[in-house]
Length: 335
Image 1 (cartoon, one colour):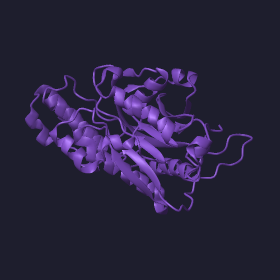
Image 2: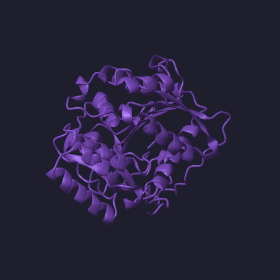
Image 3: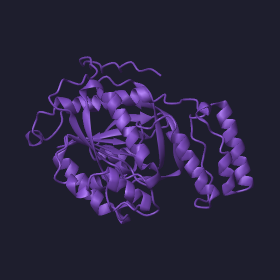
Image 4: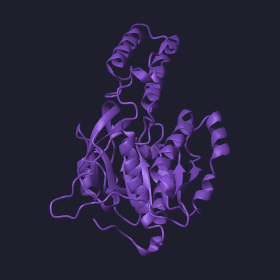
């Protein structure tokens, strides 16, 4: 994968990659984790690992929150009580930035979900009280719906796998990003590009298959939207695929999941196809014990992680450069 910085646009000065400046205090970043119970801990480990690798010696402080309106079982509630700060404390907290994860997709409209009112409040709060907020996957879909009424569109099948991505625009916060990289995606819906552009969003990167990957909304707070999952570790997509297979074998889902694209090598693909054929011929939850996917069957184990670290370093560097400024003293970005 080419990780060299993308050349400057004609007639512009070269864009130098970010270096985190020396600081008197580390950045304080809030992580609002809305993932389902089974993925709570793994999601926090992934984001902490990505930000730690990106920050280097610059350092940061991560504070954990979640929305109590997100439905949880007993184990999830116990985990949140042990590891997260009370949600009401967030509203009086000073943060440099916020990362908001997606949540379990449901069949209903987002505005009918039990967490919708709380999530809308979070979006408004982040715009007024952070320098930047990063919205991941379904959180990105919910944010643009609240901000500009842009509806997500249901895909014909789940977008799962590792996809090629191309940077199509420059922005001061992302100088030094490569021209091309790879990124994991795992979602049932997508956002159409044209309505985003009409509402003033700036598309930073697009998948090779034509869908939006990363985009930005300028304003009082720099909102960054990710349809993909740069934070994923090498085994995340395989674990998700196994969970989807389990849903089929236990009757929760009536459709066998597609094999993640671009993830498995030839032997892994053959094993996945063989297991799928067995499951379709005899749907039995006991088959899950024979799920045949050790990590060595992947073709691109963690290949996206260097570019993910660069993206995160750019974001942290942009934040650190502005950390001494009062949020109220600036209300927009120069593009």
